[in-house]
Image 1 (spheres, helix red, strand yellow):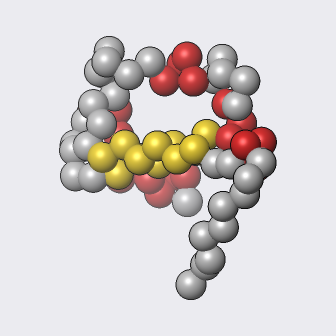
Image 2 (spheres, rainbow, N blue to C red):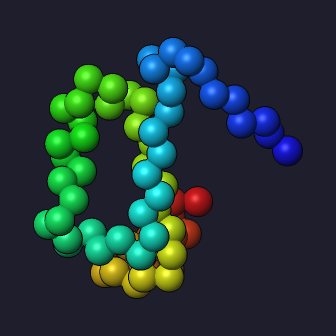
Length: 67
């Protein structure tokens, strides 16, 4: 099990956004603006959940080709 360490230095801090069942068509969260922040390289985004949006769907042949 990993140890969670906190640094007093803000430049070492990691910001984690966990997007659960996030609608990729939503206009409420401007993910493109995150890249303009001075600390953008410290931001990590994880997506998860059971939402079944069309943009996340692949055919069997696409899945086999990518493996």
